[in-house]
Amino acid sequence: MNTVNIDQTKFDEKPFECTWPGCESKFNRQDKLTRHERLHTGEKQHPCTWPGCECKFKRKINLTIHEQIHTDNEQFQCEHCDQCFSESDDLTRHKERTHSDEKPFECTWPNEKPFECTWPSCGKKFKRKENLTRHERIHTGDEPFQCEHCDQCFSESGNLKRAFST
Image (cartoon, rainbow, N blue to C red):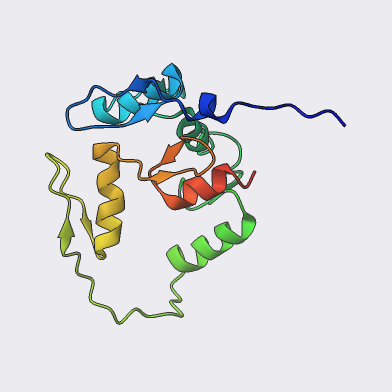
């Protein structure tokens, strides 16, 4: 059996340093440094090409996930409104909850939305603090969920899981 000795120090070297003030991140490849620097600058170099959609993303994987809303993955359209669903069960549930006079489940929770986005000209309100926090990432571009196997980051943990479950 043939064995190959790999010099581990070659992989441990990180000569590419971030020059952003206060950041001490280092990388073993220039492309990883470039991708990292976009976290500081907020650059979103991956625009959605769907007509009329102005969304842009820092990472191509997030664009790919986003583009699914424009494709025929949502093939079940409600005949009462413009909403579309990828699963027929979701359409059925939507019609029962939204377009039916029958309301089998009554919410007793107050309809207050005390958590308001303070981003200029937004003002969207939420019932739960964690929903506001997740929403604010749209404005800030924050992607705190990083893959443990590569340097891809996501704004929501579910997007990280979905990206690697396919």
